[in-house]
Image (spheres, rainbow, N blue to C red):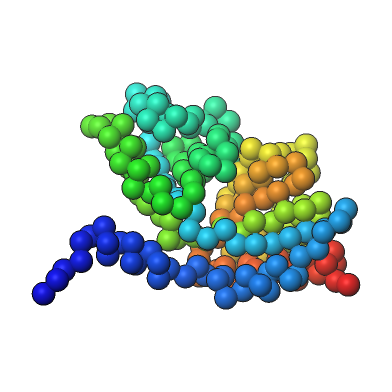
Length: 209
């Protein structure tokens, strides 16, 4: 009997993955619009997401930041450090979400665990917990304002900020990437269809022919 190596089995398993909105990619693309009042919605599947808990005053923080080459924002709530290729999102006084492209979970978890050493803290790969929606275009802020109670005006919510909030009836992490505006919305996989429907309905004003 031939037994596949763990690495080969992992590659095979990854090839079988399906994101929560894989069957709706064409639908999401078809309901977008360009122009000065345009807005587009798409899924960004399989982003690496790693939850990190550590006291901000712990000596481990400096070691973690050095290992990741990334600051853990803690001087002010709801800040994001880094960019789309690697970021740390503030979720609470002692909690961050590390976000990176697909395939970096093992590296991030390993680096953080080594940096924690014997300090109190934890790190968990939560990549399968949520999928990510990208909402972009000049009208994207107005779309979100229909389903979100946060003050999203540029004076209050700017690029490099994030927040845990309710969109409709589901919890999500909202992260503004650019001034266009341009948002990443991290939502539990089981609520992805609900949120996509909610956003498509809110977009209709700007995308209807």
